[in-house]
Image 1: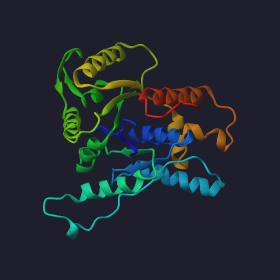
Image 2: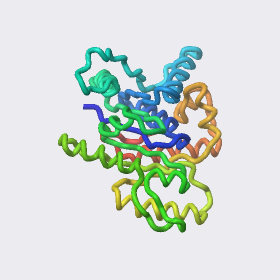
Image 3: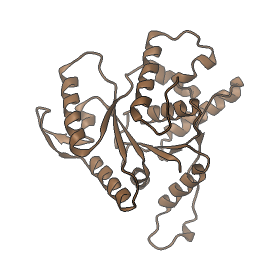
Image 4: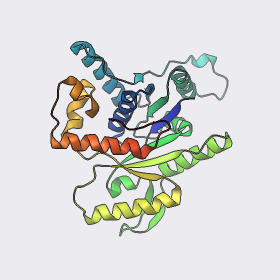
Length: 269
């Protein structure tokens, strides 16, 4: 069976699609077969990223290692039994369509609570939750007191992950490996950064996730999107000499893939 990676939280702008595209492409580049699904049926950022990549490769005559993107298939609601949800069937059909030929299936969730996102979380072997390094985003995981020290209780998103874990346990499946990824870390060792680190470490022990380093804010990520490229594609398109920022971003991706500790994955890029 394919190992299912779900990238999710319930807030936009945290870098979910950037993380999704780079993780999926990194796995493809080390020889893994990767299928990807975009559950944000309105914005479709990851789907657009993949479309840009396909169009760019066709225009430039390139054949870059790439994941396989699949749209959710349409389901005839008339064929459903009473109480069945059409979105459940669309997602299960998409996963089934990719599973036989994929080592990994990566699912990018919308930045809001939807039925599709809820079901996807229960399918996750690995859950990646990108988080901007601020207490605004920390509130996605838990509520905290005014001094940023005392955790008052879990958020609705943390409760949704808990429910997904319960469903998997009832089905006899392996527990979700939940990884919270800290994006846009400040370069300086500021007080807010220290408080965030301390709060995340305390919360990780309380509700059961691992913390991994993510991506800093870099112009390169915005520049690559229109061509559907990732940091790992730069040399293939003729960028022989990477600048310091690009080298640092590439190392961030390498560190993230290592931290995910995915089965059968050795980082060699």
